[in-house]
Length: 290
Image (cartoon, rainbow, N blue to C red):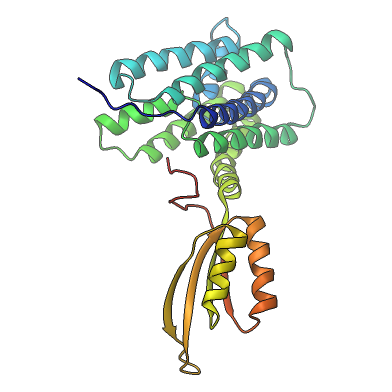
């Protein structure tokens, strides 16, 4: 039986995995250099490994690798291979980076005496890394695998369940490492989601143009020939002057937005233009959705 061979764009694969690896490097840097030395337990596998290190005679990096491998095994048991090669890659490479840092640059205490500053880095670096991973349909594994299992076999609200689990980890850190560490962990947990969302918005932001004009052909041609984007055009009637006009809709990146805005200002100063930020654009010319 002849199968359908799917062409693989190896250049695209190389770029995607290079950026995924960069994202994992950011996550590992924040976890090893800032979260682990300060015992900031903001959830996830890193938080679990920090708690376990207080009762088991193993390093946090080693415990993190063990927990990640256990979760991968559980993932294979309950999900088969359906949780994705990128999740597998993320889990293994993150554990590798953290263990590599431990071997090359062993830390026994925080790098500074400024825990609030270190908390900022402990939140921001993994958040930037996670945003890159999400943008390329990847994850760092760990509790994401548990979320996939819960989604498949239960009707639980996964987001709330994971947040409650992370909150329990953060509160437990206060019991095990002191109230100050616990409060920092809770603060980091609350900041984490906000920072990830904002970084993802910044990475994916595009400009959506709605142009009401009496020169639709000139503007449409400029969008096609100079900005190299598509557009949608339809007729309308202005209620103020009762004149027939056209609405042109187009989505461009930030650099193209300046070019298009300047052109409209110079060539159709009477056009009415609405420019909005958009971060979830699906279709040709934009990133395929997760």
